[in-house]
Length: 328
Image 1 (cartoon, rainbow, N blue to C red):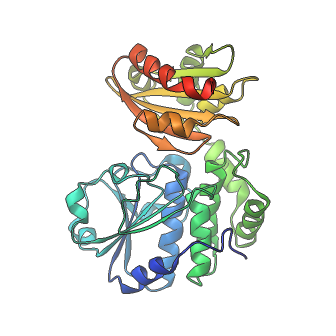
Image 2: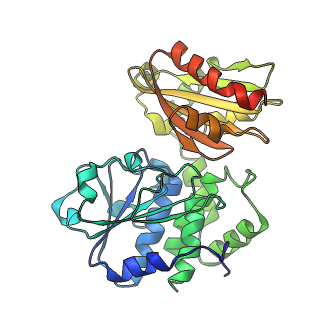
């Protein structure tokens, strides 16, 4: 094993972990496989070091992650007193404190460690290890484990593999380097089951998801002379199919896969007139800039934000923000 980036300053993380009496690892709201995989990998490492550690999030882990070892140990909802007494909180893959879904007063008597790979991260921690060079936060944890001198085991390898697999769109993004593939080989050698990951993440969807997909594809619009593709799903369609936001993960890939499309936009209504926007782009378009203009953030080729109002108003706001990257 060798580090992806040997110049990252991990010593403050090690110092904070060694000093902590009890550690709470937290993922962002509406968690995806990168934040859950990172959370689990840190958990397995710290447990092996003999630390008292808990995992607790606002929201439940997505069903695609429920095959991962110890995922059932992640609690969710209101923070119980047992966990609230932690003196160190480790936030993984969350670009801002708001993404943690916790009242800010919770952190007043705790040290907050922020580990993330989003370029738009607000550096909200007492300790911040933020590096956008990494393809996934899970890849950062791979390097952290080496610094902690904690070897990979099948559980941590599976967690990091799920994080990297999903955040690179199955190794299809520009963030995937030769070193990423070498890391993946290490994960497989350590016991990550790639067949189980593929089945759990990509081949275990509810039948109703495909009914929802039909509605989503019916909304597909191609704009800007073929350079942008738009898909939207209103809240009532989730209710109609008895599904939720996580069931539409990956829908944006249909828009991104269209020939000539530089920017794909997926707009889903979380509740009345509150829309979660996802952007995906091909070089040289920078949707991270677009998302930041709209109050969100992310990476050059993958970003997001939340907007409010009617669908027409939201689309108009997005369209205005796209102008600079489509017409540089």
